[in-house]
Length: 360
Ligand code: SAH
Ligand code: SF4
Image (cartoon, rainbow, N blue to C red; front, side):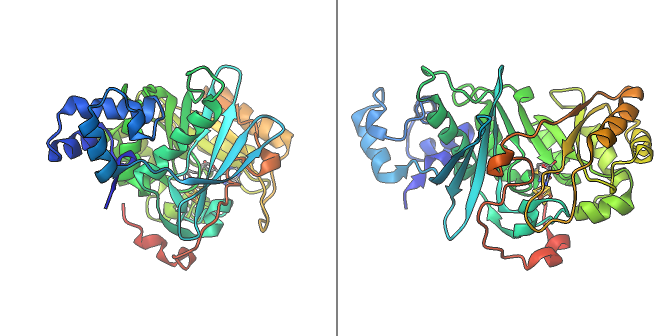
């Protein structure tokens, strides 16, 4: 079987080349062609010996997911639906801003964690994405948007905030992160790559050891009773353990704060009293808050908090000295906003029943 070279980070590619009797610098050359130049045709890799090129053509391939559909929002946001086989498709979203271009990447087909307010969660879970399928989203976006950009890749920031829980697909996520940071691949700084997690405590510790990038933690509630309901994985990793894991993460993090994400749900988690409780909860964790207006999707009974409630909530946090931003909704008209990514998922989990069996 041909080996898809997009499944390897630098170290893994070097090991594969060594197994083929090839020198490490050849692996570096190929890595640059694949990721820096976005090249998928071995014949175009002009500085490789003809013999190596023909060997690669026999034993290897470069395969990214097929693009099934592209949608363009009025605000410039782009969403791609990428075919990951057997009836599954995932979504990647590019959000252009004046000074940066952010790509929101998916790590799983669906998600098993079933957060109450999340469209991806409602789809159920099918499988983890491979390294090639994760990094393929960046490869694809850079090529698509970069066609007219004169060789400057337009993606300056990556957030792992698309479909799925990245820390439940940790090995593949870490290899993809290595590629994002590698100077022979995408060369992004650790601060420009953010992993978002619902709080898988042991995996947060592993990420800290294996590839500490910026970390966002989806908090959404100030107490365990409410968080158990909104983010059911909290039953396994309650707030006290989560806060301790955040503190440990900061020992290695490229930024000296955790970003807490907090989706604002009217009448559920948006009172001033709950904001005060949050201040107490995060007392020992240097952090910023990012308040996310709830993005509705079909079959949800939640409503977005009103502007006044959001302002009141933010004021409480700010007065306690916590920098708090409110996320601007982008791509809402093409269902590309946070939590709206539904893709196409053949559910294998029979929903929540397997939640507590999820391995880390
Ligand atoms: N599984 C990871 C990353 C993907 S979700 C996590 O939960 O962190 C990315 C972010 O979108 C999370 O903060 C999540 O809570 C938020 N989100 C989910 N559904 C949402 C919705 N309907 N409206 C707004 N944000 C939502
Ligand atoms: Fe999964 Fe994140 Fe959605 Fe929760 S919010 S269901 S963890 S993708």
